[in-house]
Image 1 (cartoon, rainbow, N blue to C red):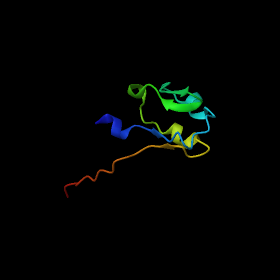
Image 2: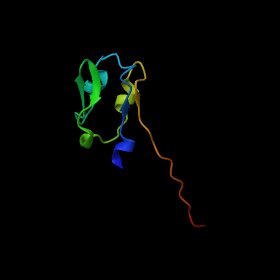
Image 3: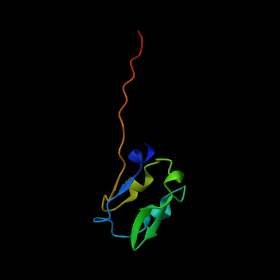
Image 4: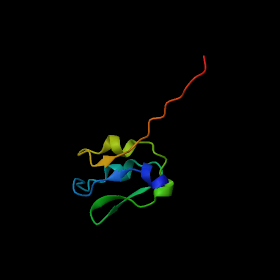
Length: 72
C-alpha cells in the first residue's frame, strides 16, 4: 500500500514553522490547524526535502531496503 511509504508528520512535535510546506516542490504539504500536513499524498514524490528541512525532526520518511542478487 502506497500510504505505508509516505512522509509521517508527528503532530505532537511539529511547531508549525511551515518550512516544509514552503520547500515542497510538489505542493503536497499544507498547514492545517497550525501544523504541517500531507494534504495531497498523491503529489508526493518522496524527495525527502521536507524531512531534511524540519528544524525539530517532526517528519519521518519510512523506507524499504531491497537487496539485489547479482549474478556473477
